Image (tube, rainbow, N blue to C red):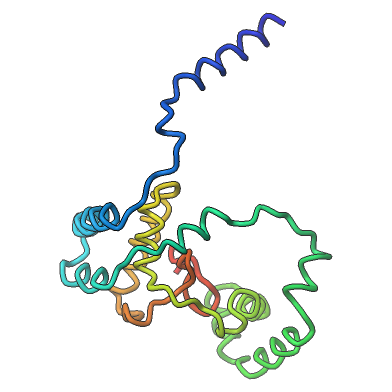
Amino acid sequence: MKFKYMVTSLILISIALIPLKSLKAKTLSEEGFNDYVSELKKEALAQGFTQSLIEESFAKVKFHKRAVAADRKQPEKVETLDTYLPKRVPGWKVKKARELFKEHHDILTKIGNDYAVQPRFIVALWGLETNFGKFTGGYNVVSALSTLAYEGRREVFFKKQLWAALTILEQGHISIENMKGSWAAPWGKTNLCLLHF
């Protein structure tokens, strides 16, 4: 009993010592975002990226309020397979997946052999994540990542994603104009996490 009282007291004291300011959501502004992007550019340079790549990649960066709102309101609902499958895998999508599997069999087999991923799973992700490439998002990936890093709750994660995006651009896999994704910046036909490219 004495131990329980002591633990409870320590928890209450710890909570009381947390500054109230740290419990409030960060106030976001265009000016604050622009200052943050200036710092990101310096960090990118320190990471070894060239000045020209940095300037080109950040040239059209803007703050996306909608990305922040979407990130803060992600659903926490857990679904069972019985409720998930009918919504996400209707019959027409299964039919389309089978057609595309046959159509792209050779390249899927090569990718499967090269990366040890079964082709059927590649097609399944392709269908689930982007409806076979129809919905890949319209956000500039560098903008979305800069916005979400600035928001602050998962800054380290989004900065790592940003450095991965810059590496992909630096290696010439895609141009900045074509590097579009959803608000959280997954990218490509399967909504690839940039860190896993």
